Length: 193
Image (tube, rainbow, N blue to C red; front, side, top):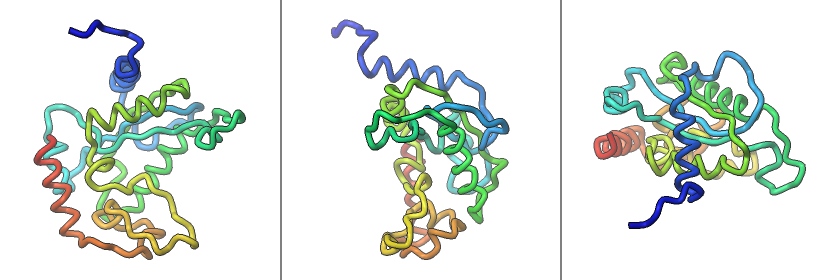
């Protein structure tokens, strides 16, 4: 038997994730702005048929998890500064849901945790591996931003095929049909939840 190491990365990630999951659920986006970067989990409580197994599950399972790092952190600069990154990321997600033709913002809640930056990526990876959220794993693209005019040859994210409405995604080429993506997500949830 391997001895328990409290400083093992898996154990450290688990402690951050436990702190996140013990926190209260908030509206998406949260009503009050706040400072900091960190991790979050988004939950769905609506009646979209494809997510019925997720909603009916006895264990609350996030539909999506993510992170928000300090400005400048992705480029490795010393000038990475903390601002309202986590709140702004949740607000962006709220806008994406609001734009979707077949989702209602009132059907979503979130949990979030402001975290010391060094642990953010580790905690997000642990959340994805542990929960295998449908929007992270099966139908990706929810967290995408407008790719800009120079990259319009990209394919439409699967999320935008099953949840149309974001203006920037409408002009991208869909390589799967709505029914194919819907079938993919329901098959995924049958095996996960």
